[in-house]
Image (cartoon, rainbow, N blue to C red; front, side):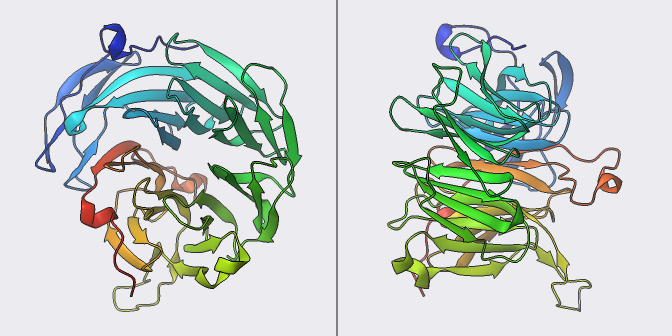
Length: 384
């Protein structure tokens, strides 16, 4: 089931226009009743971070994935409520709900094609689905034997969809044909996958990492163990980098910066993050939280980490320095994304099940947030 995409170019009436906006990078609080996706909601700005905007009408369950279009400021959001929602982010931080469609199980990953007219998603229903922006129709375009943990668009030929699954395979799909054009067997279940063509990096269970050169997509270019000692949570490819590489985040509150080629290996390093002291005077960093997501800035190549501790940090891997720390949110940060210009940083405050069922308390926050990026937060610093 899908809702027709109310695309502005068609002259269609938008579903809603919430009255929350940035004024001089400070939130203005306006309460407005509105209807979206068949529900009536109230919009308000977040007290979590003074300069960040809370989007209206978030999903009704934990938020698993988000992705901006490479053509315009449209944000696709996947959730454990089985839905993919699409929002337009307008000038000044206003947001407008545009469309939604359903999976038959929790949605675990979303992405866009290069042209920005199709949204791809994968979920616990073992299916990959495509939403066509122009027609408002949804179709199944991929199938696995277990949940699809990650979907990524590969800008090669006429465009290929890569899907990584807990069935221990990556499959490549030409959307014009019902069968995969190729399939790769992984050493374990896919936990995370990213593409920065021609590089593709897959992180699996048991800390395996497989690196692919997509000019030869069916054979791993390199296979390695994660440099981190505990379970891999996320792998994300560098952007705006002279040398190809990726970042790995784990459940142990640690990130590794890893270059693909041996000649660059002297630049590999790891660092601790998303940790807290057990008491204000202990200075022991003994409380360790998972790194849930890593997003690289599309222009400057700096990156964000977000964690189960409810914090977000911006980092410069070349200068090996932290650029910004956000005020802690009232719940874990589950996922994040920069828009195509790097001027907007979106993130989700949502339960990540890091504390099991006992942590899912009534009234747990489930928010979509927008941060307007300043240059000094995201630009690289001179190397030390």
